[in-house]
Image (cartoon, rainbow, N blue to C red):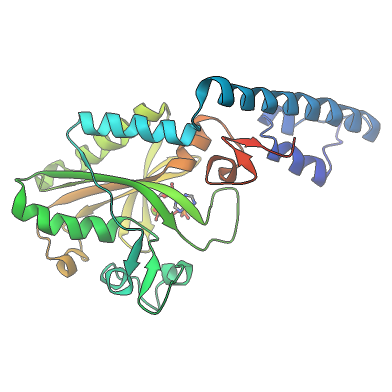
Amino acid sequence: MNITWTPIQKQRLQELNASEAQREMCFESPQARDRAFQEQEHLLVLDGKQRLLELRDIKKRPSICLLEQQLVEALTKQGFVQVVTPTIISKASLAKMSVSEDHPLFAQVFWLDAKRCLRPMLAPNLYTLWKDLLRLWEKPIRIFEVGTCYRKESKGSLHLNEFTMLNLTELGLPEDQRHQRLEELASLVMDTVGIADYQLELTSSVVYGDTLDVVKGIELGSSAMGPHVLDDQWGIIDPWVGIGFGLERLLMMKEESQNVQSMGRSLTYLDGVRLNI
Ligand code: ATP
Ligand code: MG
């Protein structure tokens, strides 16, 4: 009973989003294993085709778009204002986030030319808006953005080169309420997505120093709070909290999927279903 899938079989099962039980199966002989592989692959292919038919006939939109819509509705209901900012940002705004030549994130940035890149994060734009909104609106200022971010990543089952970030921020809240507020915001997002039993863990980020991460086996989100050393650069003095989630990771967790690639922008997968079936 100790024969397991071959590496190629294992990879195919992962592509097809096999369940953990399917991926962990053991066999008496290679023949029994290969027979079982054919059966399991057949079942997964049928399931994928069924899901594609449902997409065409009923659902019409991929889960990532539906998730974004649910989050936008939940956040606007709680008084957060959605903003839409450029995906092309300046080298100077990255430097204001302390991301310059010797910074670990710098090597992950996609450069368009000497002065402009594709944003690896939403924070520089949100910091910029805060400064103007502080003049125009009273505090607290609650804004969020959902948008694509780009990072050169050595591929793995958790990292995409382009992914959808949700970053929600609240500026100008009482300093002693920051922790509690972050917990409330994390819970608002996790409840909306439908993920229970997550943890908040103190870790360290290359940009923000100490951050409170939202974790369930994998990192789903990272939060930070101010006053923060970066605030000076942006002319911000009020206390704030902010939390960023990757929508593909949230979806992967919710749907118990095996890889983040199947959830994101893809030509290989459509709404989580591998197309070579
Ligand atoms: P990790 O340590 O997992 O690489 P990170 O700490 O670099 O992530 P953050 O900068 O904290 O990521 O970004 C906030 C969230 O965005 C992460 O918690 C994760 O959900 C998501 N995210 C970050 N990078 C990627 C990526 N390359 N692909 C998909 N999602 C990502
Ligand atoms: Mg992080």
